[in-house]
Amino acid sequence: MTGPEAGRGRRGGPVEVRRSIPRGAEARVAELYWEAFGRKLGPALDPPDTARAFIAHHLHHDRGIAALLDGEVVGVAGYQLGGRALTGGGARDVLATYGTLRGLPRLVLLSVLSRTPAARELVMDGIAVSPVCRGHGIGSLLLKEIVALAADHDCRRIRLDVIDVNPRARALYERHGFTAARTERTPYLRHLMGFSAVTTMYRPVAAADHEEAR
Ligand SMILES: CC(C)(COP(=O)(O)OP(=O)(O)OC[C@H]1O[C@@H](n2cnc3c(N)ncnc32)[C@H](O)[C@@H]1OP(=O)(O)O)[C@@H](O)C(=O)NCCC(=O)NCCS
Image (cartoon, rainbow, N blue to C red; front, side):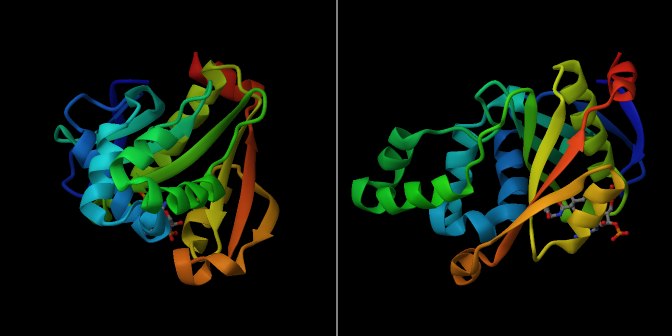
């Protein structure tokens, strides 16, 4: 689906969902990501200006679904498939940006947050909607597109992780067919990243999803 969608943003216009991040929207996507995940990613990528620039510079456009309202990106869902994620930048880039001494502990933190998809699994890394546009169905449109995309790529399931301090996001995922599989307690991350447990959720990609994606 690339055309105008049924959802409406706060400004009342139709929301367009695209299967890639538009060129020129890198800084905007980095801003949305940072607004949503800065608390979690801060210890690894702070200060915020450096973090946003790092995310924007290393973005993989083909691993993000974008929601646009009046031509502006108001929502994004990043995913991992075929060894690529929306947020790029390897160890060398982290060390080049932050320096070797400061970069090494950051790499450790980033490795704690990283996830590797299993075979025929799409991992959704992060979904973020502009604060002023939330609660209008844009997150749901992005999730539906993630499901359609997973079906198109013949994935058998979608995986995501949700932290314990985000029950509303978890409720949204449950409404979209995700179920919790396990919870990992991470009390050592509470002061550093603001959460103390991570729940892994899965959604099977069913035959009906394949048909809908066609
Ligand atoms: C989670 C998020 C992407 C949902 O996008 P959305 O466009 O508001 O989603 P929808 O309008 O389709 O659905 C709204 C539902 O999203 C959930 N939600 C989670 N956080 C929310 C927030 N801050 N504001 C509004 N809804 C939120 C709720 O379940 C809400 O339903 P409710 O009104 O019954 O509580 C969005 O709220 C967001 O960007 N939050 C911050 C980042 C985040 O938490 N990402 C998920 C990480 S696992």
